[in-house]
Length: 209
Image (spheres, rainbow, N blue to C red):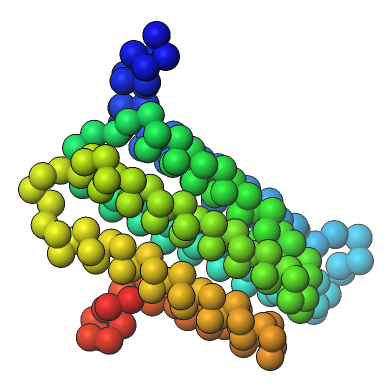
């Protein structure tokens, strides 16, 4: 009975896409809840309001980082799902594990926002990103091994998907390592890499990233 169940469970790609979209949407929405409007009692002038808004700048940077991270991984996941002919139970559970790590990003982002100069907070955020990349890579490798990819998908595309994940994780790791010098440098480098992935400028070297 168990083997028969496994043959039919988790095969609907549309349901997996819908679940993924929902989890990503909730995670992206939760990020903004960490941005709080200043208390009104001590604010009496425009200058007071400006002064109250300045501390929010340190929280906006982690917010931008995480929103870009979620957007990049959502696009990466969809790129994989779009070239699959089918799914199976194991593949679906790998992606459920991926969504589990997605749901942790608002926490690691809030931790970084509260302790933006602490290396441990930045490394926690990076570990979150590393797990996302590792699971997404595992899912892709499994899809190839289990013959879930459409037969007309060129090998060059399959190789490009793997290379993109590996290169991205390498760059993230380098960015995280910069916190040994200064967390500001580390965050700046990570944001620059994320903007490159999001904007995709037509620069030959950067287009390989």
